[in-house]
Amino acid sequence: MKIYKDQILGGTAKDSQNEKLSLEILEGFAETYRGKRHPLNQSHDLAKKSAGYIENIRVIDHPIYEGEYALVGDVFCDESKLEEVMGGFSVSYLEVIRRNESAHEIITYLPYPHYNDLELLQFLSKQNQPISVGKWVKKAADPATVALIGAAIIFVLQPVWDDLYKTKFAPKIRKFFQSCGQKLKEKEISCDLAQTVEINGHQIQVLLIPDRRKEDLCFSSNYLEQSMQLVHKFAMNHSDSYQIARIHLYFHSESEGYKIHRVEDAQGTIEHYA
Image: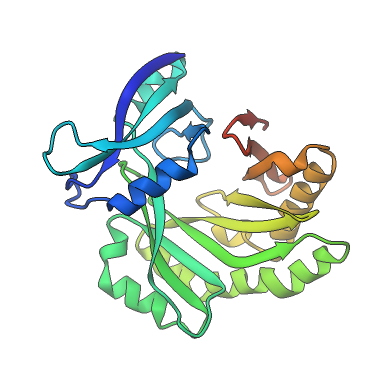
């Protein structure tokens, strides 16, 4: 592992996108990852294997801009993947910017620069659905232009979960893509799907990464159900499932469907699978 001490991960000074992070966001990151590892993802692409991790994340006075603050950490990077991540190290975060005040079951987090597209924001906000809109801030050039669809409902995987998931949740995702999918395609935006599930009283974040050319297929009811069956089986087969924080799955093929890609524990350690 190659070690880079005190790397700047973000700050309150304006960046190349003419935006800046608030001190509150920086402090929130530092608190969340106090004593833990933050995975080092390649270009914020969660379909790729983690290239290492970041430790000792903290807020300091900015070393370059007087009166500003910086989030820094010690980066541990796999030397074989060093060239792929050397565009710089940065964190990402989610923020709701247009909330459906009556209720929201789905939150569409758009990447830069699309969260500044007023026409797109208005389109998503005016859908006759419980949808809120947010921004997914990730400081990287992202040729795939990936948004994140977040399910605001925490789904309990209990004995009758499969029928409930198929009849209650999957149709909401399907309806979202039927009404908004074409608009997102016109903007060349693909989507990952994030869902929090509860197993034996413990919450696990699940991320589904589709085939970028076949989002409609990958987020159909059958494949959504198949992915949750995998998550349920995996957790039930691990006696330390209470330590699981996140499970990432990606779509392999129409015959295989989703496979578990990586599993992250509460301390930020990642185990890679398919």
